[in-house]
Each structure stands twice: as structure tokens, then as C-alpha cells.
Amino acid sequence: MATISRITTQKKNKHRYNIFLDQNNKEAYGFSVDEDILISFQLRKGMELDEPTINALIEKDNIHKSFTLALNYLSYRMRSKQEIHDYLVKKEVEPDQIPVVLDRLVREGFLDDREFAASLVRTRKNTTSKGPLLVKKELLDKGVSAVIADEAIQLYTYQDQFDKALKWMEKKMKNDGRKSFREQLQNAQKTLMQKGFTGDVIKDVLAEVDTGDDNDAEWQAVVYQGEKLLRKYAKKEEGMQLKQKLKAALYRKGFGFEEIDRFIEEYVEEAE
Image: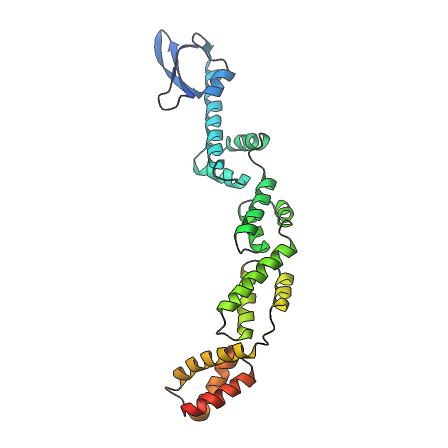
């Protein structure tokens, strides 16, 4: 048995206390505890402690320190249960203590994967150009279960997707005005898929975009692309071979035969 001979406040943390023990009339530092444990176990000078009790106090204090560590990590933003688990592993918390800390965080309302998932979906929907499939993948990567991820992604409605995808696509096509309308659509479709929008939304957005009846804009695009190609090919080719190469290259860029023939008639003849 050991007797508590002295309890002092730590200099760097006023909420932690050093416990000194008297054994065989010799005082020595025993262990330290948080204020909550000090109060909970009513530790005081003159109190006798056996070895199992001392070990239990030290273990409870370690768990409390891990709990405080997790709370601090949560103070910056909401986290998933898996994120907290991985953080505690990184901080070298004892493996058998991690479930205890997680259970307490859940029990006291600091950790809730459903709330976390819903918050992340709302944030990504409102502040990024990510589609729901990409957001769901992010949830799964953070350890949220597929069931909870599916529930949360319902907050990203069809109308939310459509409005965001359409707005992005109109801006993108405006910036890509020097490409053929078909190439613009293909590039936009590919990017929207990469951003995680669903197939039905992409299909509906493509149908909503101007069908490319702006002949003047399309002609300006074919002239821009055609002149670039002409400068490139005219160094090595001429005559029919030059025309064939231009036709093939412009067709690959999504221009129609009518625009291509017109360009060759008006520009290639002059170049020759």
C-alpha cells in the first residue's frame, strides 16, 4: 500500500495534478491525473492506494488524455469515426483504448457518422463543382458506411445536380468557343463524368445546351483551327494531300463536312 503524501498542480497545465506517494517513509512521484479523475476518485492527501488501484487510475488517465486529444482534433471540423480512429493510431494511442475513446465520443454526441456525412454533402454541394458520385466516394474513403453514404447523398437532389452541371457547362463552352461544337460537347461530357455527375443528369444537360445553330460561331472556330493546321501541314504537304490531311484533322476535331469544305475552298486554294 502507498499513501498520497502530496498533490501539486502542474505548472504548464492547471487542470492536471501530480500525485506523490509515501512508501516506507520515503516520498516519491507516483503519477499524474486530470482534474476530472482527481475529483471523480476523490483523491486527497493521506488516502491509501493499492497497486491495482494505482494502475487503474493511470489507465483511466491515459484514456482521458486520448479522449481530450480526439476532442481537440474534432474542434477544427467534423470528422468521421474512421478519421478519429486513424488519428488516434497515428498518435500511438494504445489499441485497446481506442474503442473506449470512440464509444465515449459517440455516447456524448461528439461523433456521429450520419451528421458528418450530411454536413459533408451539403458543403461539397454548395462550395465545389463535385457531382454526387465523387462526393459519395469521398464519404466512403473517410470510412463512412455505404448505407449512411447513400442516405446522405440524397441531399444532393437531381435539381441541384442539373443546375450545377448546366452552369458549369455553359461557362466551359463559352471559354472553348474556338473548338467545334461537337468537340465542346464531348469535352464537357467527359469532364462532367470525371466530376461525378450521374449519367441521366449529363444527358439532360447536354440536351438543354444550345444545339450549335450559331453558324457564325462554328465558322469562326473552324477558321481558327483550320489556319493552325494549315500552317502546320503546308510545310510538308501540298495539293490534294494537303487537303486530305486538313479534312481528316478538322473532322477529328468535330467539325462538319460542310464547314470543312468551305474552309478548304476559301483558304487552301489561296494558300496554293
